[in-house]
Figure 1 (cartoon, helix red, strand yellow):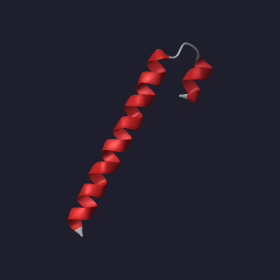
Figure 2 (cartoon, rainbow, N blue to C red):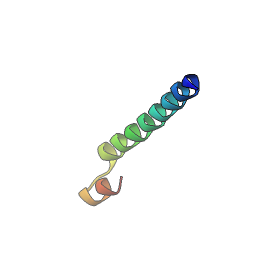
Figure 3 (spheres, rainbow, N blue to C red):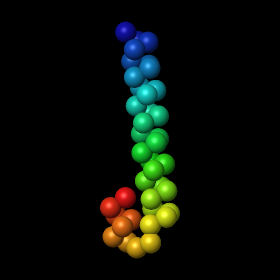
Figure 4 (cartoon, rainbow, N blue to C red):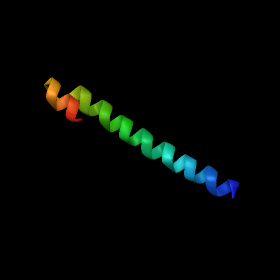
Length: 39
């Protein structure tokens, strides 16, 4: 059971890191405030 929880936590951390990276790139690349809020 702990092995499943460990792998599940790792997968969720990787997914969360991907979304954070995507949001950071959106904040850097988008031109105005409203587009950045949408990212």
